[in-house]
Length: 482
Image (cartoon, rainbow, N blue to C red; front, side):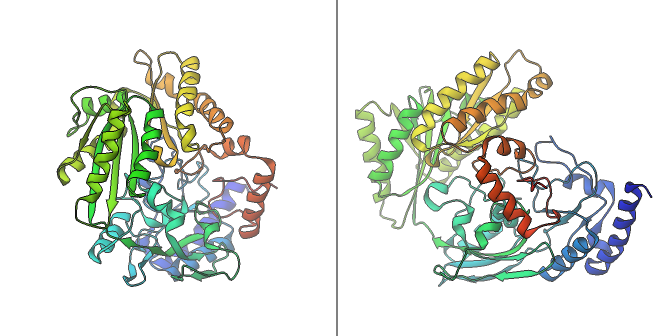
């Protein structure tokens, strides 16, 4: 019997069994309904699946995984499908079943006294933020897709965002997890403890693992005091070196109150103003670079704003800051952030864009931008680097817009070649080729090219230990080897 026929029969038997678990309404096989779940956000990858299953509880997830493992059918866990490296997209062969966690969307508990919230994997990030705010608490994970991304995916990819400088990546915000393992067993690690020295910190194995070791079904997340004062400023600087210097001064001068410190190049600002509604230049004179600064404070006495004004005044005297605008109200602060977010949207109208999500030590950000810009210009004269992002934690979104005279498809066909060059510069500076987006499918081979043999061997050993049959999101993050 041909292999394709055996696979088809295996899927048919599995489909009947899974309908018995989740019901016919939650097993999706129609092409039109599946289409949004088979295409990555950037449209670079389009996969196939015999069907998608939507379990509604941890018990159902466990049974779905058990049945798939028994049938030796691989699985692709999926949340909001907002990832940027195709980590939640099945391959084109069509052998994998998509396990969508969107129905696991309950907030199980919010313990304001313990500053924790227990949520299921399908909860929308923005809904968790709102629930925390209603309890006079803050859940600080914040990123552009927060209105649609799901917390399970955020944790599986160790999402970053705009407040990492103050609060850390997703893994720093997790106290406990509930995980369905590759054989269908459930690990209940939902403990809201900040101190637990009883062995390996197992939850950290699953955070950032992109569903390759198991499926996160729930988490205990850490909450923080809600800020009483927020100060937002849009500041001109002459160079990335000046931005890094200002970062240090601002952290020291405000008592580590800096929550966000975003680098913006003039070219990115111009793209946003040119193409995105609601974006306008906040300063009278153009500058080659800007930073967007946001501070959170625990008092409502205006002292934080005064502290930032003192920092900026001294920076002005030292020719570090030629101009700055402090938001006078919430709307003006939102306008500043709209401009920062508009950089991404504005690039869509400028032709093809090759995206790079890298990180280096904060002190090396200026050298990275200069070196990588020179290297891509050598490879592709006229290319337009748009280097922006979370300079406060060393994360640069080094996006490259096509030369104005280039053809979009011809430029995008060079994605791997140009990205490799950027990654080589990153590696030479001791950086990471994926600061917050993960490896997914897109960067597996690059990680294998650049990571040490020892590191790859450890990753493969972990994968084989948890998933010896390679059924959990195979082909993503790491190749387990033979």
